[in-house]
Amino acid sequence: MAFDTQGFFRRTGRGAALLLLPLLALLLALPVLTVLASWLQWNPASAQILLEMAQTVLPDYASTTLLLCVLVSVGVISMGTVSAAAVTLFDFPMRRSLEWALLLPLAMPAYVVAYAYTDFLQFSGPLQTGIRATFGLEGRVVPEVRNVWGAACVFTLALYPYVYLLARTALSERANHLMEAARLLGAPLTRRIVRVALPLARPAIAAGTALALMETLADFGVSSYFGIQTFTAGIYKAWLVMDNRIASAQLATLLLIVVVVLLAAEQRAQSRLRFSSARSDRQSSESQPLRLKGFSAFIAWVLCVMPVLCGFVLPIVFMLRALWLGTDDVALPWARFAQWSITSLSLGLFTALLAVGAALLLAAQARLQPNWLTRQARWVVSLGYAVPGAVIVVGLLLPTGWVQATWPNSGVGFWLTATVLGLVWAYLVRFVAVALQSVQSGYARVPASLDDSARMLGVSGLALVRRVHWPLLKKPVAAATLLVLVDVMKELPATLVLRPFNTDTLAVMAYQLARDERLGEAALPSLALVLVGLLPVILLSRTLRRS
Image 1 (cartoon, rainbow, N blue to C red):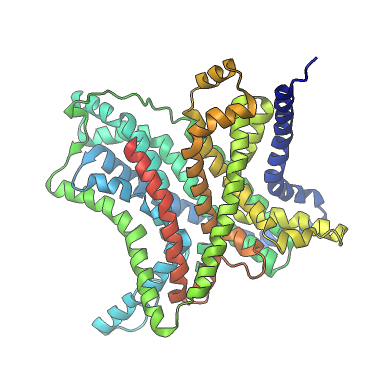
Image 2: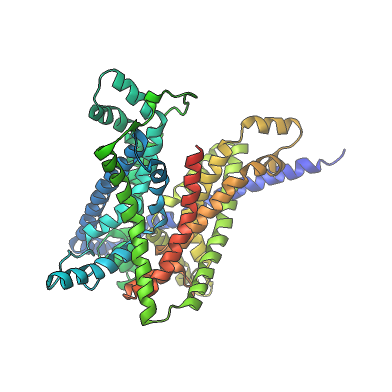
């Protein structure tokens, strides 16, 4: 009896994939599980630590974080919804250009926006200096920007595109048709917007706001630079300053609970986004966006230009000014800048390749064998992006300390802290979800009938993925690689703690130079990060234009 070589390799590959899936899910979920498991060490000492935090720093962390989230919610909802409604429901000069320009602040890391505005608005900045010189004033003439209100403004300018993008997509599906139907029924314009357009976009607004709040909670650069006491800043202070791992783990757990609540709200809002994508080939002129003229057109134009101006153009101008003035005081570190760039690109590319490989494994297995194990593994991995970098850092360092204390000669601490292994692991926990989303969107456009046809021709398993799926997934895979690369280069909290000695990235050096008030030198890596961040924004804007 002849040995079925092809069947043997097919069964072997299937078994290996089933073995890798739970292993991959466990590796990516381990930091979160470790943080939760830290509560199993509950004893009078840890209870005393929690009680002391509840009497001292915890109320401040909670109130500051809550106030910041409320202010950011109001800001991103107002700015994102108004701009999305303006470019979708109305027609005015430059509307087509502003549709994609409103996405540009996505390229700006929030901490870069904070550096730019602080340099311009601080006591010794050009604005206050110019006002005092012009009007003969003394003292501070502009309120201090380094506070909760200033941080909320920074996050609003950097994160409103989440709400804008989702609200614009929701409104563009059916809003114009339903607005026209309401007009024919005699509803005035204000009522059509309030009673027809905004309810259509409500789930999208909620989902975008939840995403913006998760980014706000995960931030460390802005809160640390502005000196505000958020949960993320408290986690780092408890670990690095107080040298108290239990307190850090407890704070990380509280932050994780808040993130899980936001994630559940975001997923619930996404599940309600059920808009019909079918459109009429011939739309009447009545169902087109309402054309504005005169003062109304000017107001709509201003409402759409201001977010782009304040969230992208002005920070770029401020950083270029700091860079130009910095060359007068000290020579720019071009050699070190090249080293930072190479390190950032190397880490980003290496992590992107690993993340895309893991995403392809998960997505292909979900396509070929959509069983319970595959669904659970995919769900666990997809949660990673919502986990703040501070929680991942604590979740990785806690077991490292336990293992190193139990087996001092194991070398675990060396491999996770003195090499890039721990850093890449933290990146993968967060950013495999980004690659998985892109690959899954590519798979959604591959008809299942192609799989059936290939199986009828004797092609299945790995050969099916290689010969049928892969040629159709090249663009989504390239997009996933780009997205993960950019996210890794912009990541600050995990890189700041887990990077090996003498391994500095653009994000880390921008933070350290700005913290030392060397904003002229910080402008160079900051502008490089913005330039890199423009790549996925351009890709996204091209996709929206094609759709």
